[in-house]
Image (cartoon, rainbow, N blue to C red; front, side):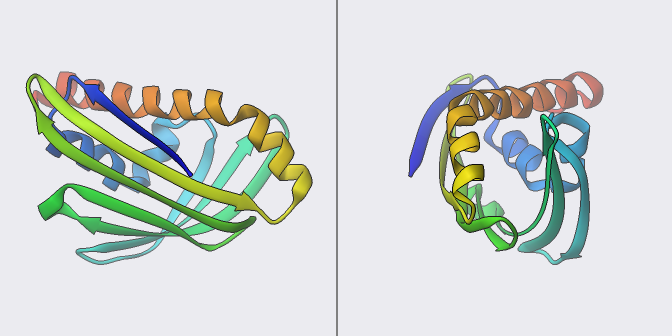
Length: 146
């Protein structure tokens, strides 16, 4: 299990929105090649995502549980290349922004995939965090939200 807490200069409700709007991931997450929302309700999204990195492409389906009241998002794999994949996001208001609590635990079915992904994990996590923050900044600039 990897867990990270960090302060970002964006409001909690905006960061929650950026993570919850999964249909926009292909616009700003570098390895998300495609995404299709299979179903959506007030508190749950099921999405099929195509991810690609250095010639590797894999499709997986995730179930995203939304809890706007507590600014929390939980994600679990419904189908795909992982033996298991769970992650959570929670956003806490803070002075001049919010605190982001992110946790992820996963294991690939394939040992080869696991070895390749494990080597790139920290770098990918940093890129993902930067991409979500850049998306929040873009929304503030375009919509004046914040």
